[in-house]
Length: 100
Image (cartoon, rainbow, N blue to C red; front, side, top):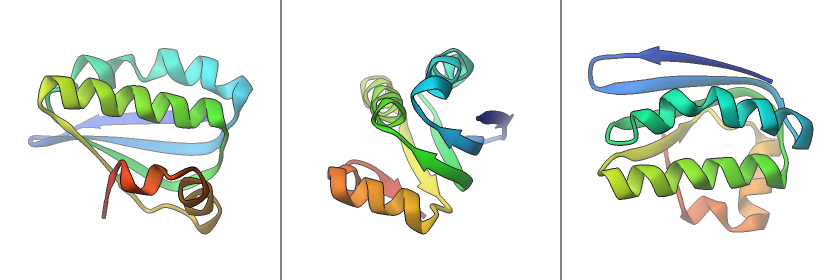
């Protein structure tokens, strides 16, 4: 799992690549600290290259969502693959996030 963060003028772009499974979620929790530090901004999670997400990965997405709601920011997910979208649909997470 790889996370690249790009600070842009009005938002923060985070590109996720690989599999966000239980093992990778431990590192992702550390890597996403800059996103949590900027929870007052719009954070765009680009998931075009995200191949898989486990319940541990979903929990981290939810952690980020809660932090942004509390700080006045928001999370937008873009470019979701069909497999990842299916996980979001089954778990009910589609209703929790904004998509573009």
